[in-house]
Structures are given as C-alpha cells and as structure tokens.
Image 1 (tube, rainbow, N blue to C red):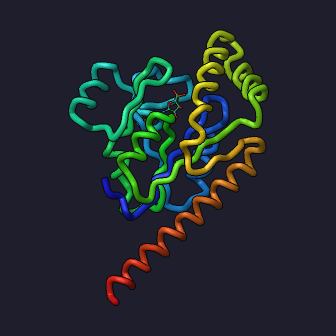
Image 2 (image 1 turned 45 degrees about the horizontal axis):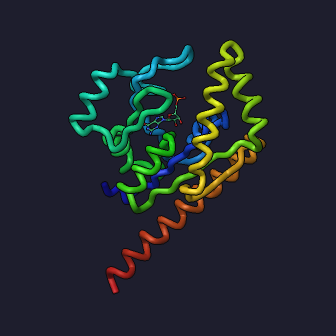
Image 3 (image 1 turned 90 degrees about the horizontal axis):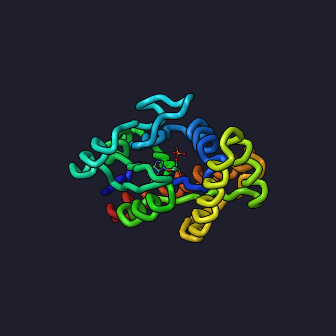
Length: 204
Ligand code: 5GP
C-alpha cells in the first residue's frame, strides 16, 4: 500500500501507560491528523461509542471482514480480535498529514512489513514497573484479578520495545505529549522536504 501523502504514526504501549490519552492529545496538537478507528470483537466499555472509539462487531462479522480482506492487519489481544481497516487508512489520507494507529506490537510488526515508506512507530514506556502496577490497580480497583492479568500481559508487551523507531517514557503527561508532537512535526517537515527534492531532481 502506498500512502505517500501523509505519515503513518503507530503508537503502542502496554496497558496502563496512557496511550489512549496521549494519542488523543497528539491528534489535537498535530494539524490535519486523524486517528484510524479499529474494529474489535470486545464489548464496549461504559464511556465508549460504536464507530467513534471502535467498530464493535461480533466474532462472526469480524471473521467475515477478514475473509473479505478488509483489514490490513489483525491481532488477538486479551482474547479478543482487533483489526485495522484498509478503508480507515485510506479514508482521509489525501487531505491529511498524519494518520495515527493505536495498535499493539503484533499490529505494528505487520504494518511495518506492509508500509515501508512514511511509517514510523512509537513505543511508550511507564517510568517503572511499580508505577505501572499502581496505575493498573487504580484503573481496575473493582477487579484485582483483571489488574494483575493486565500487569502480566504488560510485562510481555514490554519485551517488544526494541522493534520500534522511537521510545518515550510517559512520566509527566504534558512533557511526553510535547516531545512526541515535536518529533512528529520534524518528521512531517523531513517528508515534505524529501517530496520537494524529488520534484526538483525529476526536473534536472
Ligand atoms: P483496548 O481493548 O484496551 O482498547 O485495546 C487493547 C489493545 O489492543 C491495545 O494495545 C490497543 O492498542 C490494541 N489495538 C486496538 N486496536 C487494534 C488494532 O486494530 N490492531 C491491533 N493489532 N491492535 C489493536
């Protein structure tokens, strides 16, 4: 797939690091950017809405979409299926500068294989494992078992940090968002520079 007009920015992290908040803030900070809405078989949480946070579908429907090759990548995370629609990537890319993908390490690996140019991956780390543990216990205060199972899978996810282009530690939220947003703005400038050089060289 060639999306030479805009950057694909993958953001991954273990659960509890603050990825959703960070991605939403980045979307607001970066002009002409949008977030690809994934498809999932998991049930919506209290504050989530269909077609806004995810396309929530049954397992049957998900597998049908997969057979129809509607996804660029799919993964099984915490026993549910997740997938990135090809149509979401193409949706606005002509008018946009950045498409954000909030996906896990499996998705990041697959996208990197399929989109070679203008695709960058960011991995967010917690300041420490004990801080992550505290955050997860707070988030799932009504379900300690869930908090510990998320901590267990967080430890597994952390192993993949080295596959990513850029690593950031979410210690102070604002600092982390500002640093990542600066990096993305630099990448946009770099891409635009290359595009215009290409035009110049063509004319030589
Ligand atoms: P949650 O269920 O907490 O929203 O997401 C669980 C994990 O699935 C997160 O790491 C999230 O980034 C990842 N995820 C969400 N959408 C996709 C997707 O389309 N593909 C893949 N590979 N992972 C996804």
